[in-house]
Image (cartoon, rainbow, N blue to C red):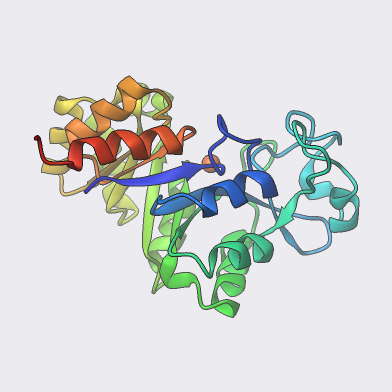
Length: 249
Ligand code: FE
């Protein structure tokens, strides 16, 4: 069965990476919740997509330049009073559910990895006994390689940006994965078809999709039988998956 991950808590159904979106997702029959992490200036980890505050909050400037107290003072746009969550808070929200964590390790404003971020996040997962329920993802192959070296994770997925596919080609993508001992890639849904899937699978890679955000894309990914996809419309995706699992009457 193709697994469904609620992307940023289902960002077309609720404001992304917010308490509201995560509570929404916690009530869904999805297998995973996707979220994004950045470090704070005072040694915490927060859950937010961008390296800067402007797009999704009332704040401004780089996330990593702010203390947790400063980050807590801003409101998440589209909500009445939602505050940015810490990684331990998101872990605790999902721990009692059957939902797995799909944690995207982000990079800084210059698209450089934050030193030690994954290692720190793993310690927090371990403190809650959640490492084995966590898939680590990143657009940066070296970060995924670090996750490959970390034992006990549920999975590690290299998110392949379309520009990387254009520049490197499929053989280049396979070569990068092999060089980093990466076994699973995530391809943007609009770049994934039967030919691409067959090529990657023939190279021994597991294949998932991301940005699966309308009914046509959901149906296409279910038809292709990808292992997993992230979607901003998890409720719709669940209905579509359920409808094809029903025996024809
Ligand atoms: Fe993400």
